[in-house]
Amino acid sequence: MVRAQIQLSEKQAKQLKKLAAARDESVSSLIRQAVQVFIRVDAGPDAGELRDRAIALAGKYRSGKKDVSARHDDYLAKDFGK
Image (tube, rainbow, N blue to C red; front, side, top):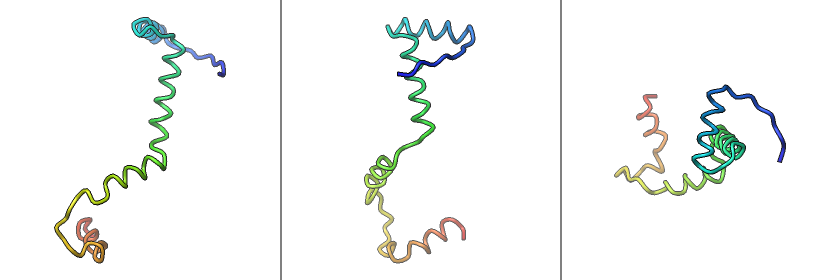
């Protein structure tokens, strides 16, 4: 691990210590968890997760139209007003 020094407001430090005590964890552990959540949210899903989501959706919905594969551009243009 890499040691880092941060500055917190008095209120943040108090709240973080209280939360750490309630969870029976260290303040450092909570900060590492928070950083990991921030990184995950900011980075968004990785390519594998996006692929898995797309595959899960394939074939899930039905339009009732039989020519979507041939006329998909026409349907998109109509729906998006182009």
